[in-house]
Length: 227
Image (cartoon, rainbow, N blue to C red; front, top):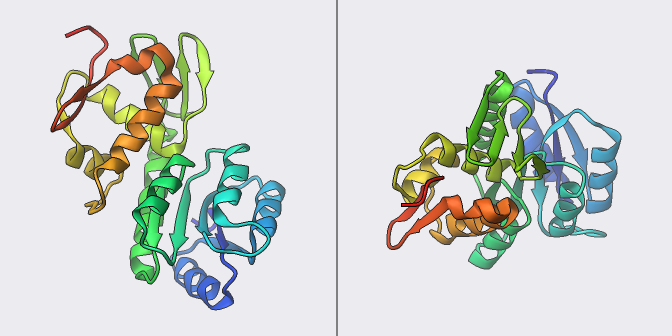
C-alpha cells in the first residue's frame, strides 16, 4: 500500500495534518497542497497519484475549478470536502465528476473508509475483463469505454454506474439499490444524485444512452433490446 499516493488539498494546515495522519497510519503516502494552484501543479508533476481529497473553499483557485482542471487531464477519483451542507453544492460536485462528497465536520475514520472503498474498487478492476452490451464495450481492466468503436471519456463514478447497469441488464433497479452498490455505502442524500449521473451518462453515450430506461417512481433499467 506504500506505493499508493493520495493528494490532500486544503488551505487549513490543521485539516491537512489530521487527514494525513489517519491516511499515513493506514500505509498511504500523502502529498499535500495548500491551495488550488499548488494542487494542480502537484498533480501534473506526479503521475502516480491514485486519489485526490479536495476542499472546496481555497485561495487562488477553489475546489470547483481544481476539479475542472483535473478532469481535463484525468479521471482519477476525487473526494470533495466542504463546510457547506447545501444540496446544490453536492449536485454541482457530481456534475463536475466528483466521486464522493463529504461535509465538514466529518469523522476521519469515515473518510479513510471512503478512500479504501474507492481504491478497493479500483484494484478490483485489474483483472482482464471485457463487457459488451449492444454498441457499448467496457474494458474493466483499463477502465475505458467504447461506443460504436469510439472512445468515450467517463468519470470514475460514471464508469462504475455503467458497469453496474450492464452487469444487471434487463433488471429493474431502484435508486436506493443503485446507490448502495455503486457508491458502496448507505447513501442518505437526495435521489437526484443518481438522476444527475444518469443524465450525464446518457449524454456521453449518445444514441446508446437510450439503453438506460427510466422506470417512473422507481429507478432505471438497462436494456439493449426494445421492451
